[in-house]
Every structure is written in structure tokens, then in C-alpha cells.
Amino acid sequence: MDAVIVYESAWGNTKIIAEAVAEGLAATIDIGMVLDVSFAPPADMVKADLLVVGAPTHAFGLSRPQTREEAARRGGHPGETGLREWISAAGDVHLPVAVFDTHVRHPNLPGAASKKAAKLLRSRGASLLAKPESFYVEGYEGPVLPGEIDRATKWGAELAQRLPESSRVA
View 1 (tube, rainbow, N blue to C red):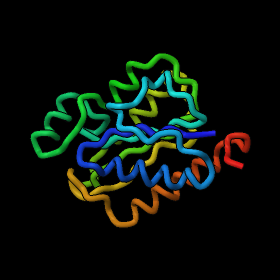
View 2: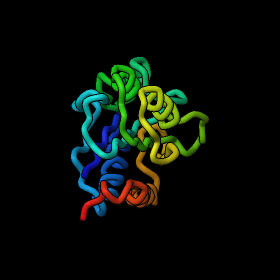
View 3: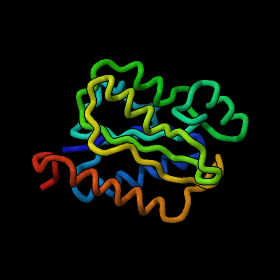
View 4: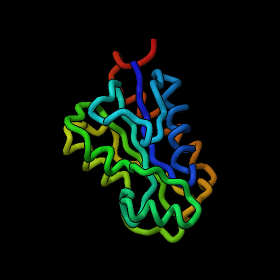
């Protein structure tokens, strides 16, 4: 059985966390794909035993076209499509999902992209395998704070353990 990970990243920090989550999952289940949202199939077309999605927190939640434009003006490389649009364009998503975000640690601003993504996915029929998780970066551009990559790997391993036995690699 396998997992698909879809992420949105402007400075590469969310991609780094997505790859660490994949590493943690890979100890127990197959990783089908780790994809930038710009190259991902529609959410309702994903065929996997687990869908993991991640996004940076922009303006207290998921990015919007305006916040991606601002990130690009500051030197980031966001895609044209964000997780908000990717999820909103989906039909029914009847999969277990796990959701994470990257979030500025200082100042510790309110809001989290993961909570909004979880809400949108649940509205499409997905079931949360775990509560949304935040991983921290220094400033808006990063880097990922020390210890966060290891924490993401551990979180991925924990997600794999939450799946039914029939979904795990023998």
C-alpha cells in the first residue's frame, strides 16, 4: 500500500518537511509520489491509502494568489496553484489524510495553513488520520529550525503506524 504527498512551497522549506515525512512513512509503507501541488493530479483522482498534504502558512492560513505574488516579490518561487485551489477544485476525496504546514516561529503569529486545509479536505469527505501539525521555520523565508526535520520524519513514522495493518508493507 502507499501514500501520496502533495505540498506547496515558496522557499523550499515545506518541500524539505514533505521529504522528511516521506522518509518516516517509507519505513512502513510505500511512498507513491511526493509532488509539488503544481504537478499533482486532482485531489479526487489520487489513488493511495494515505494522502498527506503540506503548505506554508501565508497570512494566517493557506496561500492565496495575492500572498503567492507577495512571496514572489520577496524572492520566493511559489507556483501558480496553491493547496487551497487544488483542494477546492476536487470532488469527493474519500481517503485518510494527514495535513501539515510550515509556520514562522518568531514572531509566533496566529493561524495555520494545516487547519484550513484539514477543514477543506473534511468538507470533501476525507477523514483525518491525525490532527494537523505545524513545523517551524526561521522568518518568512526559512530555514527550517533545528530539530524540525527529525520531528517531521518521526511524525511520518507515526502516521504510518496509525494506518490499518493491511495498509502496511510486509
